[in-house]
Length: 233
Ligand code: C5P
Image 1 (cartoon, protein in one colour):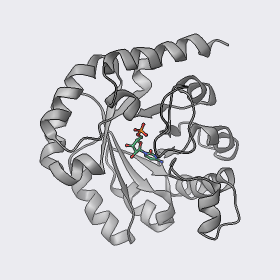
Image 2: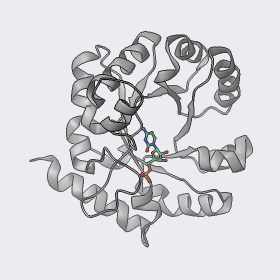
Image 3: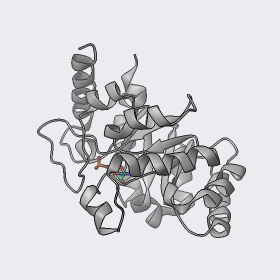
Image 4: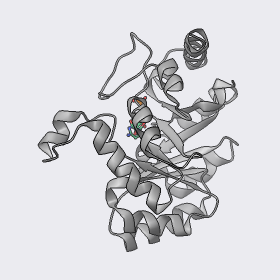
């Protein structure tokens, strides 16, 4: 299996030139890149188009959430940029998701379930009497009904999702990836690259383990080696 294609690096930099230099350095070692709020809040659509020129598939991680009409009108502008993937919070509800699915053109819509920086005690503090597995599955069912193309969750939840979600071509996109020994930073529901692949991840979103490394290409090689060494077992 070509694991490289599954690795999307989260380019969480503010500076456009730094982002471009960084992407050029790692572009032969990964399957795509993710740019999100940090990059977009500074560089906007123009910056996105400059990154697009580098030729890699882009996941535009805007995590949209607002009333359906506002999301529809904002998303129209984003879909004009033609990103391969665009994210929205599933918790925005069915009507909001449906608006997005109706206008998406070629862009695949990824529904964010529960941020990987959250854990069960956060759900409790929101007043939910559910664990992460049930919470993620409940949201995913709403997404499936609205017609999203995939879900963003911790890889821990994929087996539960696969049991409850009927659509076979769904994408399972997983941040919160760390090699053992890497810092977890603000992430809580973390998992190793090989575990994520074993559990069925279609796309591994990896940021700081690559971007904060002294040798990013080597860091990616280490990730791919960890997958190859453990995948057959
Ligand atoms: O640096 P790190 O590998 O933790 O980066 C993870 C990336 O994935 C960040 O860009 C973050 O915004 C994003 N993300 C996440 N959890 C989600 C959805 C997206 O960490 N549920």
